[in-house]
Length: 389
Image 1 (tube, one colour):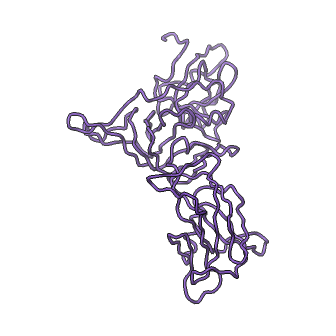
Image 2: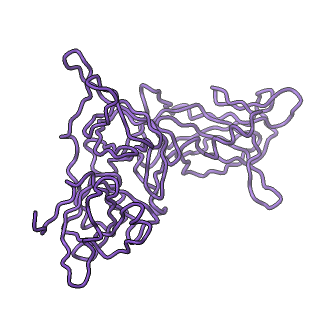
Image 3: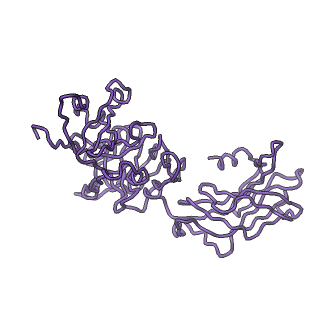
């Protein structure tokens, strides 16, 4: 992230635990950096006792002090600074003017904070093009601790942006303190569900290879559906509008049986698929069920070009509801026996109707629908009017 890069680009300014930034001594004079302090009544929290993170953001005030190279207040300083967050977003006024070395009771409204965060203050000046740019003089607040990351928080979106990306895109986070269960496993990863949550409840864990786990009953066990996961860490990443956690590490829950530890598996925690027929054209509603189990009822295969790369490479084809809504299906890896070409509507042919169930994915370049349904296996495809039904 850009904020992190500034810490590397300007190594002369050292961040210390008291929230100050100073420069190298002794020959430099003038501004070295800033001290950033929270209001006295602001609770920083701790890893054991975390502060609440309301939906509208954490509102408090900070005091900013310009510092000279001897770590003393630089009262001759008058200039402008930008107030931002190390990870989250400051939704209050971000450009502040310091006079005589101080700016007091500056309001900050800290949004999208998870786990821990800090406030960053950076000096900015106009360049020859009259554009503001950072000078490298900066300060950073003490760390404060907010609620830990959850699947529902990560999947909460930035509305209005293409693909409704996660507000925590490009951030490494740890999911914990929630009951989580594996709802589907594919060749390159698995889908993890936050038990008891209806909206934004699931996320794709992109392991890049078949996910295996240790189980004392046998070696190198393929991760079973229904496995409970104690915690998982990964980097949030948007792949054409589909939220993933890449290169995750995770720890399954184990139980003691006959003196051995076995995976704790409870398939009853896997939620019933959500019927999405009525929301297929409502992207905001569809977003709530991304990476979750869903179903579309009474659909048939719509016409498509089997020579198109999307079908040849991924077995993607459109499904159509009785009222003309569409959603793409992808069967290459999980239900390869389904013959979509044979189901294409042709003159004189009667196409079959199906209930299609599976995981809901998104790909912002897919057509005619950016939403893709991936069945877990052939059992997720129920023919309603086949002769051998």
